[in-house]
Every structure is written in structure tokens, then in C-alpha cells.
Amino acid sequence: MPTYANAVEGDNVDGEDLMVRRAAVDALGPFNGAVVVTDANTGRILTMVNQKLALQSGYQPCSTVKVPVALAALSENVVDRETPFHLTRRKTIALTEALAHSNNQYFANLGEKLGFERVSYYARMFGLGEKAGLDIQGEQAGILPVTEPKSGIGMMTSFGDGISLTPLEYAALIGAVANGGTLYYLQYPKTDQEALTLVPRIKRRLDIDNLVTEIKPGMMGAVEYGTARRAGNEDPNLPIYGKTGTCTDYRAVAHMGWFGSFVDAGKNKFVVVVMLTGGKSINGPVASGVAGNVYRALSATNLYNREPNPASPTALISSTVPGPTS
Image (tube, rainbow, N blue to C red; front, side, top):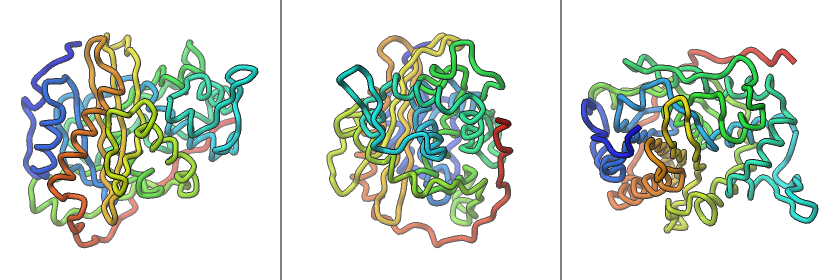
């Protein structure tokens, strides 16, 4: 998989927010990757750079899987934010630091405690393994394994082994984290008029509102002192929350760099997901740097202070996921 490519070739920009697109295109530069920016309060895709790549059936999510795993473990009362985990006899770690520094041992342990069935149940609930968009032409769903990967549940919950994730799926999930638990169908307007009259469509409501406060310190810590420092959280009034991912997807023969993130700016909540593929120089910190450049460019345009579109009625058009079998 090449590290560099023409990311905008073949993209259709009708209906996109062109100011947001320009920021994303400039931030991505020559990298072979995709950038998806969404409105977490409506599910609207503001821009999708490198649509051919973004709409494919996905890649190994690497450590970005730790966000849904953390939510699953909190939901099942396996841990709370302060529960210590012994890395060595004398060193312990808890959830915030484990997210900020992307500690694999900690999340492998959560996977062992949850088990494959419960991990799969929550992954499905959070939208993994299904299309994130509503009638988006060309979109393919990611893949969730139906049996535990040969590498074990610990590798699944620390590196995303066996899972194929799309940037759209992760943008929808991070949007639900940003807004407190509403998993919207992502919608991609084809015209400016469609964008103005977009009616948000709710896929399902997630019972995570009280859990988001437990993971946000770790996602902020990733940017402030952890694996996502290149995102550069320079404005204390505009905090960036995110999670990096770095691994090798052997199916695609590619090094992967992921960063899923959001900003909470008053009435506006924007999600930026960056997925990079290529050689050894590609990793999560590089992806976080791309996202940081998107946020800085949008801040310079005063986008965060823009009045949101008048609230449209929402429609609940799907809701539940079958529970775990054990």
C-alpha cells in the first residue's frame, strides 16, 4: 500500500461544506488516506476526502477499538475509571492513563474479563460491522468476526485483530460519544438544498451518557500528554478528545494510522476521523497531526462559533441489537 497518493481524485463535492473540505484536503496533504468530518448533533457528513478509500469495507482499527471496549467494560461494571490494573508488582494503571497512552496490556485484560460474546454485542450496538450511512452510494460495511480470532480476545480488544472498521463507522461512534449517546445514521447531502433541509435520522440511542464522562479524561489526555500530542490542543476553550491507532493490517499489507476525535464547542460538536495507510512512517500520531491541522484551520475560519442549522425533527428508524448469547 503506497504511503502517498492523490486523495481527492474522483471525489464528488456536491453538497459538502467547502470550507470544511478545504481544511481537510490541506491537512491530509499528499498522504494516502481519508478524512471524514461530521456534525455530531445531526449525523451530517460535512466532508469526506478520498471517498473511494473511505467507502471501502475498512481496515483493522488498531487501538481505536479501545474506545468501544472501554465503554463495554464500564457498561458491564467490569471496571470504573479508578480501578487499578497491575502492570508489574509495583506499577498500576487505571482507565484514564490506559486510554491516554494506549496501554495494550490493560485492554487485553478487559477483553479477557468481558469475553468474546459481550465484546461482540457491544461492538454491534456501537455500529461496528454495519453500514454507518443512510443510503450512501458505494458504502460498504466493515466486518466483525463471528468467532473469536485465533490470536485471542486480548488481541481483538487491544489491536482490533479480526475486525475491519470503516472511517464512517468510527465517525458515527465518536459522534455518539460527543453528543452523549445518540448514534445517528450518517447522511451525505448531494446538494446544498439537501444539506439545509436534512432531517437527522437516529439509528439507536446508546445508554452511555453517564459513561462518557469516564472516558473523556483519557481521550483528552491522549491529546495533552499521550499518543495524540501532535493534534496540538492549543486552545483551552476548545478541547480535543481523541484516540489514536497504530498497527499493521496484514490483509491489506499496510501500516495503519488512525485518529478518531471530536471537539465540543458550545452548541457545535464536530467529529474528525483520519485514517492513513502506507509504509512504516504511517502511525496514529501522524494521523492525529493531520486532524490537529483540520481543527486549527476550522478555528481560523470561526466555524465553531457558527450558528447551527435550525433544529429539524429527528426520526428513529432503527433501534435494537440482539443481546449476547452468554
